[in-house]
Length: 231
Image (cartoon, rainbow, N blue to C red):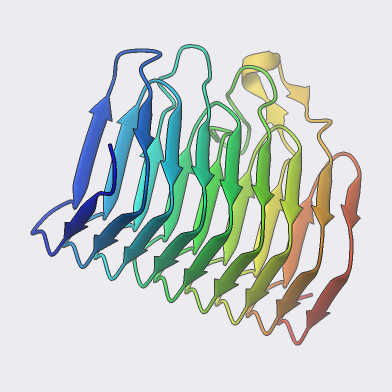
């Protein structure tokens, strides 16, 4: 699919289903989902999902929601280019059993979390996923004025981020959590690290500026955290 414009619909802007295992969903070009009465873009897949340059604004549901947990080989989700999520419920929600890779996320004014990335498949506080798929955020990433957390990442694998900026969120600026057991692996404890590269700023959030939980190393470069409520 190329250059989707799905705007002003009474329900979901674009509702894409590819439920045969291994079949991919790919959105190329520049894609807009604006002022829909439900989710802007919903993808239900059983293969890899790749999206380029998505903008989702003013949707009554989530801006973009991607779920490919039905992939039998744990294929991942990738967002490339520049991706903007403003004034939705959750700006971007990804549920996967594979690697989640994103570039240049901008999320502001959403009435729940700005961005929520989950390849843990949480069951009663423990992961339920084969292997240890990781989450990586490249580029420059901004999370402003969201009612929930600016960024929330739940995974059993390592978390790698670049240039996180989280300001004036009503929850945590960023919540990064790989401190979990995995019931799919006989309650093995995660050994994935959390590493934050580049320049990282967490200011004026109602809860923690940065809340990072891991059983292994946590490394952060060039970190600024000021005037957060619970840090």
